[in-house]
Length: 110
Length: 115
Image (cartoon, rainbow over all chains, first blue to last red; front, side, top):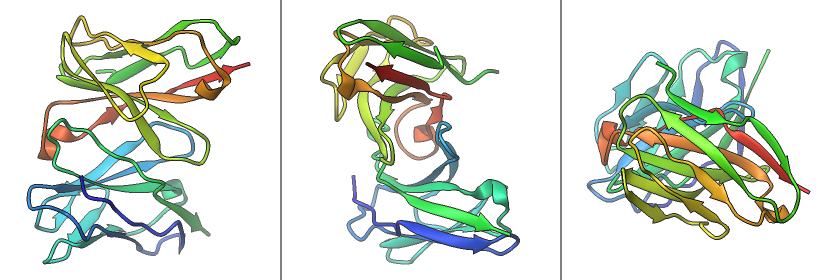
């Protein structure tokens, strides 16, 4: 599975959009991009995934560049409850194995 | 629909003791996983299973054993506990390989201390 690079930490004001970048320059054609988050010490929570096209669900939007070498997770109106570690994971899902890095620690402030 | 349930939530072990961490899922998922997470670090895969009777090693399997006799249950056995096994353990499950099927659902975790 391709390696990902994320910033260590980011801050966002409550009510503003949080844009979390992820670089995956070695991604293969059959690999998906998955985003999870982990609030405090809870179990990771799935947010969204995509292959080529941009995706949106009730939690977030995922923007994947045309060359698929990077992506951005967008939380449109961040709240204090969105403070968490966000993981960007690339996987072909052959055995559904996911490799978690250290992620981006997002701090949402008043 | 409870999802993925892990027991116990907390446990303190003495060095050399053994224990089994329980994990059960009610989503009829084929795939199940065990991860550990050390403080400030990402999750590391210990073992995984693609179906009843089939298990395979992940990144950090030493000191652990698993079995998968049913679709629902995937217990993790610690033999001869060591301080290096102090960690938070997460169990997860998914439908199958690729795309939406590979989305993993996690339990709340078991916090284990070995003293």
